[in-house]
Image (cartoon, rainbow, N blue to C red; front, side):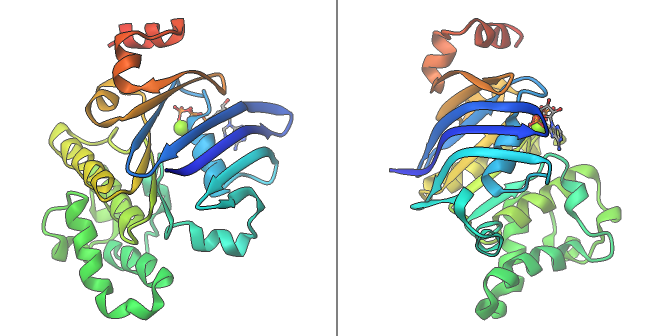
Length: 251
Ligand SMILES: Nc1ncnc2c1ncn2[C@@H]1O[C@H](COP(=O)(O)OP(=O)(O)OP(=O)(O)O)[C@@H](O)[C@H]1O
Ligand SMILES: [Mg+2]
């Protein structure tokens, strides 16, 4: 069954059109990869889903999630969707951490704001999310401030924040780019676990190795248009589009 259905998505920033009639679906319990070169519009798709677009933008189309068109929801309704039903790991995660608060309290706050009647379990849930995101000694790191952590650890804090509420859909924008191979493996395992629980991931990456490792289906984006789509094996085996062939040859 499809969890998310994007239909005819068009997006403009001012006069500039950056997404052209983008349509795709995400099934329950699958990892959909979006690949494409820098500037092709990958992050813009994720921002459209979460409705985190600048004032100057205009969006058309439908984004059906759990029976509702997200583009029709009020800002108040969207706040309940963001973080709780749909989690997001941003491309530049550090920008989303507050320097004045410990990282543990920020993850915990995300959980408590969406589950105000479960405050009693918030600390445990926070530690569990940190552990699942590959953070060593979570009790100790809980009390760290963002500036005390390396870039890779801050990235993992953001992964913990995006997953602490157990969202049905996780949007991950280049989540493993700053991480070394062993941590990358842990994160990919976390995505597999999410899939095995019947939840779904949209994984934005330029790394076809990552696509091959965890992706079920892949969508290739070029200049804001989908030029290729299919299950990962057939796209790798017999890419139809010349641009996809070029991307695959580059690895
Ligand atoms: N806030 C904005 N205002 C105006 N133009 C924007 C804005 N954000 C992105 N763009 C433009 O929209 C296009 C798509 O950008 P987007 O960030 O979605 O691409 P991307 O595929 O995520 O690239 P990258 O791989 O570098 O992250 C680019 O031409 C970019 O310059
Ligand atoms: Mg991007």
